[in-house]
Amino acid sequence: MIYTTLLNIAIFQGIVLGFVILKSSLFNSNSNKYLAYLLFTISIKLLNHVFDIQKVLISYPLLRILDNIEWVFLIPAFMFLFIMNRIDHTGKSKQRNYLCFIPFAYSAVLNIINDLDHVAGIYTFSESGNTIIQILGLIQLFLAVTFIPFLPVYCYFMIRHLKDSQEKKWILALLTMVSSVLLVWLITALAGLLFDYDISSTMSALALFATFIIHWTAYVGIYKYKLAKNRDAVHNFLNQDSVILSTDLQIVQNSTSIPQEYKESITADNLYFQKLELLCKDQHIYTDSTLNREKVAEKLGISAGYVSQIVNTITGDNFAHYINQYRVEAVKQMISDSEYENYTLLTMGLEAGFTSKTTFYKAFKKVTGQTPNEYKNTSK
Image 1 (cartoon, one colour):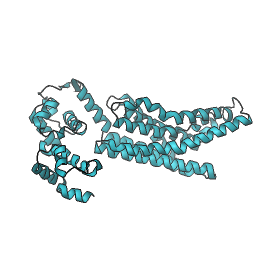
Image 2 (cartoon, one colour; image 1 turned 90 degrees about the vertical axis):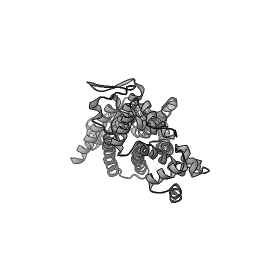
Image 3 (cartoon, one colour; image 1 turned 180 degrees about the vertical axis):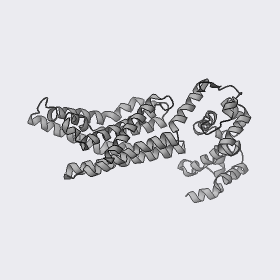
Image 4 (cartoon, one colour; image 1 turned 120 degrees about the vertical axis):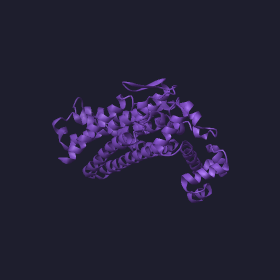
C-alpha cells in the first residue's frame, strides 16, 4: 500500500534525522536537540497510526498502552523549547523547561493506570474508581484544549526576537505547519469525542501531512539552508584556537597565512565568511561607523586582502556594499518598529552605522531602489 509505504519512509527518516542531529557535532546544540525530540515524537505518532491501520494492535493488544499515551502533548512542548533556545543562548529558561512536560506526564500516568485495567487486565477498577478516572480524564481534556493551542500561539509572539531573517522565515514556516496539524488534530479529536464523528479519514490526512513536515525539515532546514550545520561550525570556529577542515588541512585563527588549496575554493560554506556573517547577524559589528576591512580582518585573523577576496567572490559585491546592506536592513527594521517612531530617519541611519546623511541616503537608494523617505511612506 503506497500510503503505508510513505508513512514508513517518513518514520525512518524522522528517526534517522533525529539521531543525526543529536549525535553529530555539526548539528547538535541546545536548541536543535529539541528539534530532534520533535521529530522523534512525530515519528512515534506516525508509527502508532501505522500499527492501527495495519491491525497490529489487534494481534498485540498490549501495544495499545503505547498507542493510548497522548504523545501529542510533547509536540508543542518541543516546538516551544526549540524556539526558546534559539532565542535564549544563555540558557536562563532551562530551570523552567520541566513545566512544559507536566501535561504530558499527567496524561501518560493517567492513561497507563487506566490501560493496566482495560488493556492489560492486571486489576479491575471499582465503580467509584472508574468515576475518579473519568473526572481525571476531564482534567486531561481541559489540558488539551488549553495547553496544546497556547504554546504555539506564544511561540508566534516569541519568534519575532530572532534576528536572522532567513532563520526566522524557516522556523516560522515550521511553526505554522506544526501548529496547523495540532489545531486540526484537536478539533477532530473533540468532534469525535463529543459528536461520535468518524475521524479516521481526517487523521489519515493529518498523518500524511506530518510526513511532509519531516521531509520538509530534512530538506529545507538541513540540506538547503544548512542552518544548523553552519551555525555550529561557525561557533566551533569562534570558540576554538584552530579548526581542522580535513585530515590534512588545519587553519589557525590568528594566522594571516591562508593555505593555497583553501583559497582556491571559496564558497558560501567558507568558514571565514560564515564567521563574518555571524559577527554581523549576532554581534552587529556593522553598527560601528569606523568599521573597515582592516578591523574585520583582525577579528577573523586573516589579511584585509583576503577579506575582500572572500566577500567579492561569494557576494559579487565589494566589502563596503556588503556591510551597507546590513545597515540598510537595520534601518528598515527600525522604520517598522514602533519603538523607533520618534527617531528621525537620519538618526536611524547613524544608529545603524552610517557616518553621514549623504552616505546613508546613497547606500539606502542603492540597496532598496528607494530613498529612506520613500520607503517609509510606502511601508505604512
